[in-house]
Length: 377
Ligand SMILES: NC(=O)c1ccc[n+]([C@@H]2O[C@H](COP(=O)([O-])OP(=O)(O)OC[C@H]3O[C@@H](n4cnc5c(N)ncnc54)[C@H](O)[C@@H]3O)[C@@H](O)[C@H]2O)c1
Image 1: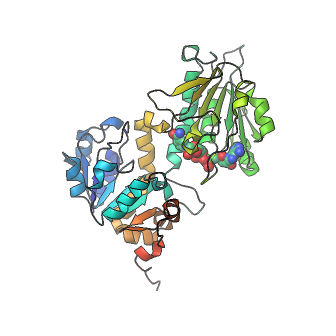
Image 2: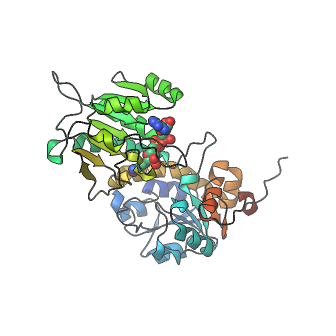
Image 3: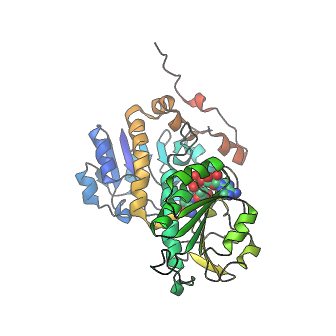
């Protein structure tokens, strides 16, 4: 198969869909990989490294789209790319269709095959192509929180780990899923006094078994949160209720009970935030202050560490890309139910129920666009 990797052109996007190692794995299997010049630069991969791995380097985005059967990207195509997409061309990338109606209509019109990273789903309902970004954001939340706790950045001026003779900072983590677990690991590693709250008692049991002694677990409820915020130095919002807006676990009135210079990192900002006073910020201007409490609410945290994020993402996408390239999308999606759930828009049909419902569009069962299953002898 001919696979194309264009340079990401969305504002501030430095990730790239394939690393030189990924190129090498595909080329080894007999595929042709065409990479747009400088596509890997933002993540620290040079054109020379791609060439050495066997990629064909192309000068323009038009060349990449024009000559490829599968396009691998990170972000959804933006308006200037719509006309480059050809009928029947497979696009494997994050789409987040439900959040942008014009993109959905454009992909229907182009009759592309849109396989969305965010809806590829394993049998246990986990989302293997979203997990790596949650891992990055979770770990980063402590790094950023520690930074903004410094006095020159308007924090309390407290070191997370303390020093001998001085107690460590208190870190409160709301939600013990992927983000919360990674945040807890980082905070614990730095020596902080960590508490994770969740509503899932089974999850709390698991965390209690695997976390070091400086991590406590607790049941998430308003009473407990009200008490803990008064003495916490860093609070990380990491809750998720699938398919719904995040609940406001920290309300505006609680801010006045916190100590001045407390730092709130609301990772759940992309689902509306679990802190009532959360509003999305950017890496250019990541924080704002309300009632002497520092708010960090960057909606694309992994964007600040493109080297790590690119490697983490491509580790997860490559095995699927290899299946798609080797079998073609129809057979790969017929054989693998995880990939099948990634199909959102195919040949002008919306085949993912959530996207159809979001915009009142007709919905077609995914089976109508797939080959009939091969009979088992
Ligand atoms: N800002 C960013 O750059 C960025 C990056 C990645 C992920 N995220 C977001 O981070 C959030 C968390 O993602 P995740 O992958 O960890 O999700 P997850 O599903 O792994 O974990 C969510 C956890 O929240 C818990 N929860 C639900 N309601 C709760 C409540 N009332 N109190 C306490 N816990 C509660 C759940 O039981 C679950 O354990 C999501 O909104 C995700 O979109 C943001």
